[in-house]
Amino acid sequence: MQRIKDNCRISILDFRFQIDNWQSEIENLKFPIRHGVICRSMAFYVGVIFCIGFMFFYMVPANANSSPKLAEIRAVGELNEDTTWSGTVIIEDNVVVPAGKVLSIEPGTEVLMKEAVSLIIYGQLIADGNEAEPIRFTHYEDGTTWKQIMFVEAADSRFVHCIIEYADSEGAHQDYYEPGPRKYHEAVVVLASHVDFEKCVFQKMPDESRNAEGDAIAIISDDPDHPGEASANIKGCQFLSIGQGVHTRFSYILVEDCFFTGKRGDNDDVDLWGESDPAPLIQNNVFLNPEHDDMINPTRCSAVIIGNLVVGSDDHGIVLRDKGFPVVMNNVIYDCSTAGIAVENSCQALLVNNTIVDCGRGLRLFDLGRWGPPYRLNPGGGTATVINCIIWDCPQPVTLADSSSTEIEDTGSHITIEYCDIDGGRDGISVSGTHSTVTWGQGNIDADPQFAEPTSGNYHLKSQAGRWDPNEGRWTSDDVTSLCIDSGDPNSPIGHEPFPNGGFINIGAYGGTAEASKSYFGEPVCETIVAGDINGDCKVDFADFQIMALHWLVDNSL
Image (cartoon, rainbow, N blue to C red; front, side, top):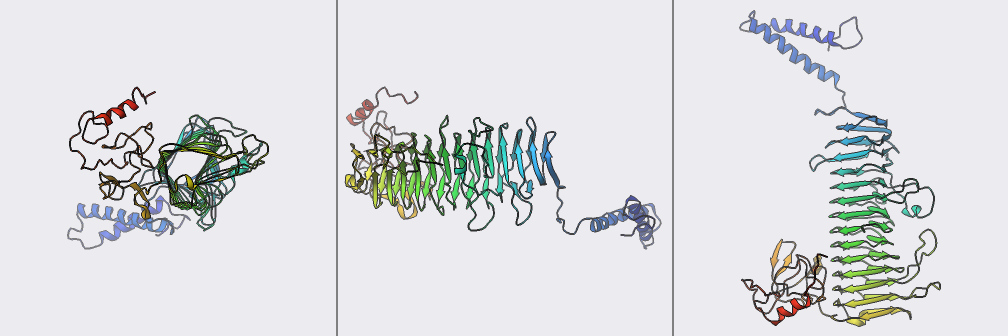
C-alpha cells in the first residue's frame, strides 16, 4: 500500500488517497459507458473494495488465523465488575473474582494460563460450554504449566463441557492429614463452596508424558483458614490418564456416570476422607485399567457405592478403610490383582448384590496398620455383612486376618454371609488368626453362576425366560437358567426387576435392577399377566400368597 509522504504511518488519509488514485485509474479504462454516472459510481465502489482488500492483506499479522476470530483478552489482577470472557483469554498473572462478582465464560472460549498462575474465585464462576464448543483451560505455550483454579467460600459455581489440562497438579494428599496450613496441589480446589462439573474432561496433567500423574479435583470442608461445608456434583466427566480424579475431606460429593481410565501414581481414582451429611454417593461410573493402585477408597467415610463397573486394578478395586459404615451395592468388580473389595481397620461394611470375579481375593478383611502419622488409622480388622453377592473364579474367594494391635480388645476380622454364591462354598473362606470369625448364614450356594459372556465382561445371568444383552440393547434367551435367579434374600425388595421376577431378588450385581434376568418356570413366559400372579408363573396360588405374606405391611416409603 502506498503511504502519503508527510506521515510515517498508514492512516485514514492514506485510505482516502488510495481511493482517489484507484477511482482515476478505473475511470480511464474503456468501459462501454465511459463517462456516464453509472460508470463513475461503479468505479468508486470497486476502488473501495480493492482498498479494503489491500488493507487486510497488509495489516493482518502473518501468524493470524485466516478465519475471523474475536480479539484476545488479557486478564490480570482483581475483576472490579461482572465480567464475560469469550474468544481467547490470556491469564498473565493471578486473576481474582471477588465476592459478589460473577465471571461468565462463553462456549468455545480458550483460556490460556501462563506459567504458575491461578484463577481464584471468591464470587462466582459460570463456565458454560457445550458439546460442539467446549471451554478449554490450558497452558499458554508448550513446556509451561499453570497452577490451579481455586474456589474460596464462593457462590455456587459450575463447569459445563470444559476441558482442563496442563495444570501443575502433582502431589500427595497425605500432606493434608497433619494440622497446620495446607498447600493444595489439585487442578481445581473447592474450599467451603459448592461446584458442579458436568461433561468435563481432565487430561494431560501436568503434561502428556507417560509418568504424568497430576490430580484433578479436591473438595475440602476442613481447611484451617476457610472451614465450612464444601460439596460437588460431578456428572458425566472423563478422567484420562492422570493421577487422582477426586479427593474429598469431610465433604458430600455425587460422582455419577463418569469414566476413569489409565490412572497413574499412588493416589486412588476417588479418595474420600471423613464423614459428611449426606454421605458421598459414587454411582454408575466406569473405572477401567488404572496403571497402579486402588480405584475407590473411602476412609472413615460411610460412602454409598452403587452400580459401578470396576475393572483391571493391580491392587484392590474398592478399599473400605477405618471406622465407618459404607454401603456397596450392585457393582461389577473383576480382574483386580490383590482383591475385589478390602475392608480394613475397624470398618463395618454392608455389601449387597455385588458380582466379584477373577480377583486375587474376592473379599479381604484385615488390618492395614498405618496407626501412626500421617494416616493415624484406627487399629482393628474389618467387619462385613455380605448379602446376595456372587464371588467366583477368585483363587481365594474370602480371606480374614487378625489385627496385630495389642491396644484393642477385639483384634479379629468378622464376616457374615447370607444368600450368596461363593466359589467353593464355606471351604472357600480362609481365616488367619484365632480371633477372626465367619458366620455362614442361610441361603448360600456354590453353583456356576452361568454368566452370559464372562470373557467380554458381560456378567448378566443366563435365563431361558430372558436376560438383558447390553451389547445388543435388547432381551435375549438362553438354553440354561442360572441358579442365582430368585435365590436372594427373601426380605430384600425386588426393586426394578422386570416381570416375571419370581417375587424374589436375584443374586449378583443386577439383582433388584431393571437388567435382572427373568424367572423361568419350565414353560414359556405367560403372555397375559393375571392379577395376583406375583411370581409370574401364570398361576395365582399359594406361592403368591406366601410372597405376599412375607412382605405384609412392609412400607418402603418410610
